[in-house]
Length: 210
Image (cartoon, rainbow, N blue to C red; front, side):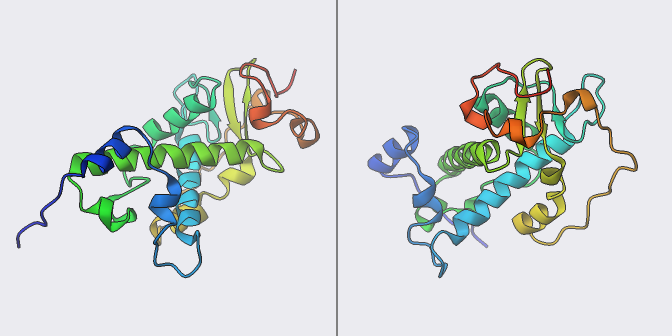
């Protein structure tokens, strides 16, 4: 069976991609066949959340032990964390695949599809991280004193559900018998996190215990 011939983008589409102007709406909302507007975009956002949880769950601490819900080798900026998540989860199933794109993008050569998928994945991760940092009760936060990103256990508990939503049925992940829980990395109670949570806190300003 002959493989399907891939196309090069038009000059205007090439400028659109190379300029980084691809948007989540054009990829996952406009002209989608789903009856509910935004349904597929919501699915992709949940997939991005799964990637975030996966990165926290598999991160290593200073002793090269799995830390469960701490990230210790990442800078304080939102973009630092987005890059860390992308790198930590690059193996295995991709956040954005060719088949997730509209037909006009699916028909392009591999190198162009890879660029679009990478841009879309970056947008999804950054958007989801903003949501996790600035929600009613922030799910993740950064400790400047310990230089650690931490995720709430309630976010980590979503792992199996998110994985099934993102990629279909998956057997439950084997749970570690003992959860490593370094109390020095725990942040303030939510009444304090609410005052200076997420992007409202300047990089390097601790929102953890003092």
